Length: 493
Image (cartoon, rainbow, N blue to C red; front, side):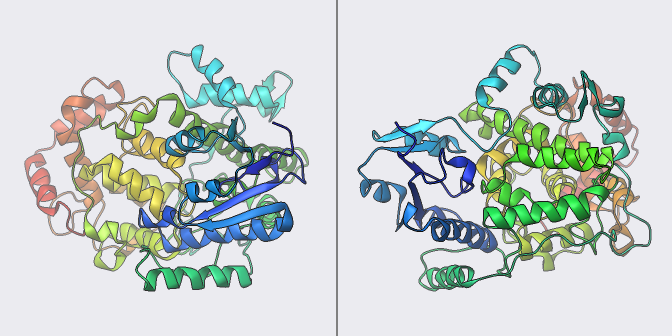
């Protein structure tokens, strides 16, 4: 097919790099059925539809924009040959390949293509992120001085683990870029209100002013603000949390990037330029570049590499149901301050940065033994930057250890001591991170030992778990800890 074959762009393929030529004809489809099958966060629905409609307005007569109940209804109206870049989920990929007049092209929007990843994976018995990341650094010549990494180190992660600043309400960094809403945003909100009133859709979470870019020009503006004002401060407190500063120095670019509005490799080179020009330290720049060409790409490729059944893995045999207070984002039901604050952020914004996701939300789910497929679905629906390819590997592999160690060498769980060290939450909480039994026992501390007790057998052959399991066996009050946590069960802590 020629370069002027109409290009069908999904709502996560909205940047100019998904077209072969600037004037290529485009097909955009707004499918209401995508929102009727599951209860997405209201802010996510608004963001996706706003981005799609902004792209249609931007392209004008160049785009055919169809608002239909299903994608198939739209495609029935377009009989000419269509090309599409590979979609980002197994289900969508199978759907587009089932249509005779659609030509499926290789995926875009990532740094390493699937062929290159496949060649790399064939040469490695285990798919370690660090090995993949170093290979990508060499291939893209990022932060390299000849054949050596800049400043002699591949990884500055050890320097980027400073706790939250003591007695500080915020990190003192300039705020991220914020958009101004327009009439398209207003119309999307009115449509969503009407759909809800008519009972056609239902959402979780609260609506509010749009916080993320929905056009390529807005995304570029947000990137420039991050590179100039926030990247220099990003690294040291990358893993810290402050109750008064939900942004810290994070980029807030994951949502527009996952809408396809930013090319991650362009972002990586922009960050490297800041380092080479002396405007940002290498620790911050390396940490950000590792997120782009390392972690983000790695998560994408793991999703495809381990096959369609990967999302159903449940190596720790976790089958507990997600409780209603968590599913409904009912933060007001909670006393545990870290969980209360983080869940409220999800309810009100559909976004928190990666440490609250991993060490508060996911940590609690892992300790309680919630079904990993349900946890994956919850993250997919409730986060504005959540897509199936993002959440399957991050949740099944990384946070819930449900793949049995294909991605992570040990479960990512900790007691209240970690949260106390890396945040200001514990000083404001009725629970005490040092206590595991009693009225003031921290649910994360007690939950940590309950998790180890419950999973001692499947974790017995994991060398990295030898020390924690030995510590558990020395606890004289382990039976009391386990019994208290069992009684807590799905109740709001």
